[in-house]
Image 1 (cartoon, helix red, strand yellow):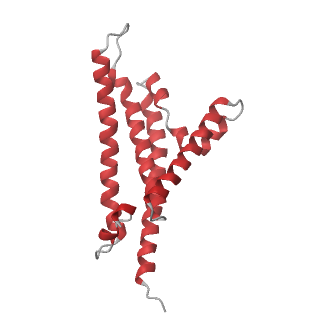
Image 2 (cartoon, helix red, strand yellow):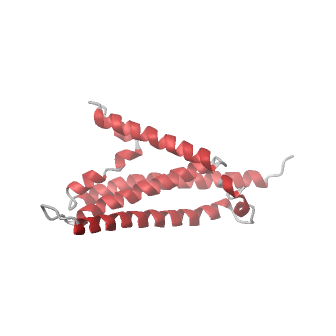
Image 3 (cartoon, one colour):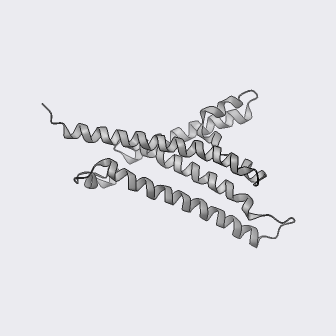
Length: 178
């Protein structure tokens, strides 16, 4: 049963599924922050070790790393939402991958086709622009606040919807069949 990714052994205990969701989300958020930090530190090491023609300030890459956190957090939350409606891990991953690929295609079309920039409003990837944040890191912070506000906000909405789906599933399981 655990191989299906359903947490049946844990969910069978006298604890609500929402109570299982909150610590998992906190750990996932911490993991996303840790991953973004390690990516930035790796960039710092690369800048320090590789001889470059011009000096590069490693702080210039900090907003981009923070944007990576926002993307990771959103993806964790949207996958949690998908998982709240499905019991098979492989299918959840497939649906999430399909969702990501469609979003990526929308962003590519928005970037490549003249007059289609408006499509960026319909993809979460419109708020993942690390290269824009690196261009001028001194003015990148307000833009980062907007980008990560979108990504983290959408992630929190997805997490709340997943908690609601779990709560409704708990309620449906506690109602006896008549």
